[in-house]
Amino acid sequence: MDILLWITIGFIIIGFVVLTSLKKGMESKLAFITENMEGKESSAKAKSIIWWIVSTTAWGIVSMILIFWCIHNHIG
Image (tube, rainbow, N blue to C red; front, top):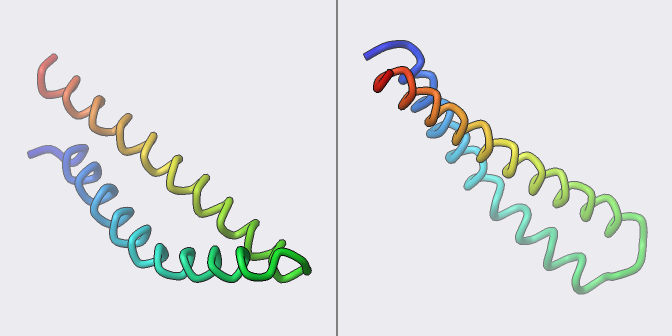
């Protein structure tokens, strides 16, 4: 197995572990926001949720690119 495959597997596994460990905190922040719509604290928590969504999307896109790159290297 080459290093690109190991990087891809490691990136996906580590990213999945990090995102799932942060998920519970994001759920509690969302519950706080829905209960308290006003205030600076709600705004800060909303920004952190938005950044979590952006980072999750970026992780997914990079994971797909790495998978396609691995497949391309092994087939071609």
